[in-house]
Length: 397
Image 1 (tube, one colour):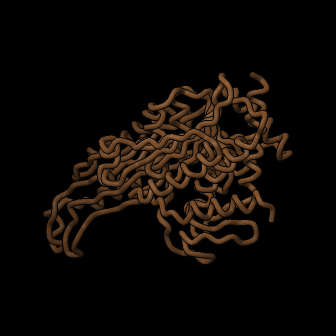
Image 2 (tube, one colour):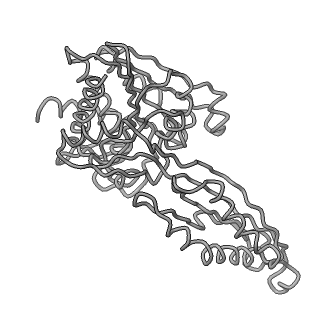
Image 3 (tube, helix red, strand yellow):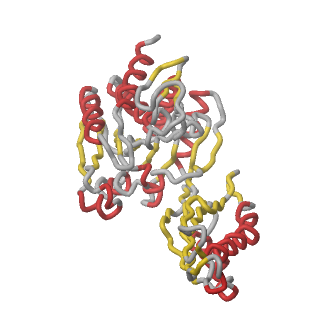
């Protein structure tokens, strides 16, 4: 095994062992301190930014007692364009069903490291650490590279990149190292619209249901209308090979005794919104379909928007041509250009008007699942692409 591969494996496994689980946001300082030491040893200037508790409380009040940290590192040997690379270090909970190992006890088997976050996104973090190391070893590097390692992407990113974007000067280009796979570049991401539909009736004993108003039955009518009138229409909409979706009933509540007419019923709607769709139109489409039934049912109906993340798209990118060229020259493949089906932190940079793309090692199918893994060779190859991209950007300057 060559030394570079061995170092990459060791760093990645160290990262996975630190259980940076969000929610609630554990062990963030331990991980940032570990990265800070590595990058300082490579000769980068670093800065640890603590996100104010008031900001955390604003977005995630239940996790306000867990401090958030961002690590910012820089290697600048010239003035001019700045390229920013980002990866998030938080991971989802370990979960169950693991067979190869336990979530936070990483193993290396047949070229893969297994463990929670191996793909999403500690493989990306390891790639940026390796990038920093290799840049620091170049004698003739003349450019300005900034790296950020941020928390809370799994919670929406408001206290990670969402906070960072207002604390630093705007870079010229941004690459976010999410697990796109080496053959895919994401130029945007789908939005998320999550609603709770709350139906309130009137209770009565099940032996005399005519005295009550059955919230469950009225709620089922509403759900049936959404399925019959909207579901196929929504899911026929496509953009760059991805389709919109509507999922009902991920969360369902109501009733408490078998011999009562239920006076309360609640169900959720998860709507994935394409960048080609108008966000407010997507919301109104759902609301109008639900409210059309108000005169035909006896229950009252309330709709609550519980999560709202707008889609994002980098439609005119100078960086895309350069990245596609770098991938082609290094890996000898023609990458696919697509969008992420889930929101990624790239959207914060894109909304700030920065030419930003998502590209990194890992497999999105493996992310969040049992036996999550990343191919170590993909981490090394992604860094080769980043280095070629950096060279091409500064050669054109």
